[in-house]
Length: 382
Figure 1 (cartoon, rainbow, N blue to C red):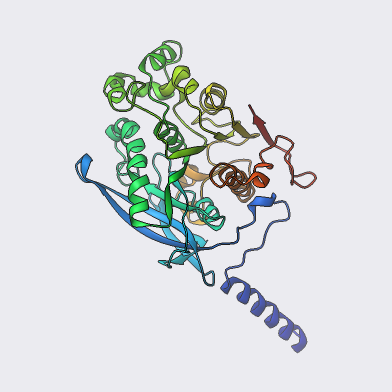
Figure 2: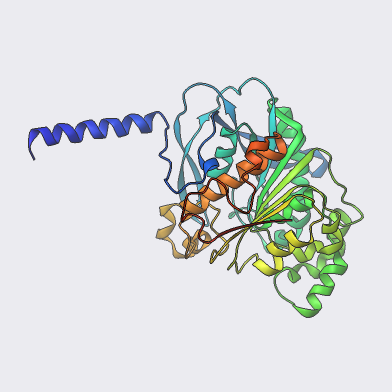
């Protein structure tokens, strides 16, 4: 290779290395506007929280938050199934929080899952001026999930969320516990809707299971006990919670129409039209239709199944069973992640920061999308 070509190659590599060292990512040309990272440098730290009222139940949380300084690259070490994975991120570990107080978002993972299941989204929201605490629910991780925990977590996970609101703010003074959003995926989607005030309804589940004994009906024999903890007569809206964003939410028959009619908070439901786990017609579509919210949104990705919104790193290809846990057959997941970034930022900016300009992106006409980039993307409102 001629010397000038070698020199040119060296200069290009040096430039790329400099960009990576500064933590600057390259935006995809097809990304919608708010998929672009916000103006805040992001810090991250791990919290341990113990709920003494529930047999000293200990909950780990990864918290992303606004800070200052120069943004750094880092790697989150996690697992998918039994496969260790390394997730690339851009956050300064244990950095000093920025001055001021920021709306708090609590994030709830799937069943099973980890607090890093959609780290890309939590990190992104922090760059837009939120403190985002992703919980790791005991008994709901890949290592701890049991058949019994499938049942008990129906009540335990919403209680984790409600406990964490105050505890995260106690350990992170920059988090505003009076201005809270909830973000959840799959079982976590159910968990945030229940935590926000939509109680369990055994009669609705019984009626559903008489005609279709599948999916959520596994919980029916245990539902009287669960209702006593998180049922219609037990669950009251928490005034601290202002908005809920649910991705591929599971378990709508557990809640039912009566409970959802009383759910008045702004609600965003993001779903895959071909989801065969939290099925589109049983779960996502019904959460949207039955919610009593005056401001509600349904994002549908055509031909998407259950996993377009989660992290899926190359390491999972080494173990087929774990590959299926996060694989998505049709959608480019980087593209799907950009959509999640855009709409979650628009939604929480609108309802937690009263940013009306960002709220303009919550329009079915999909403003800001470039030509040809709306194929397969459908947004509906009330």
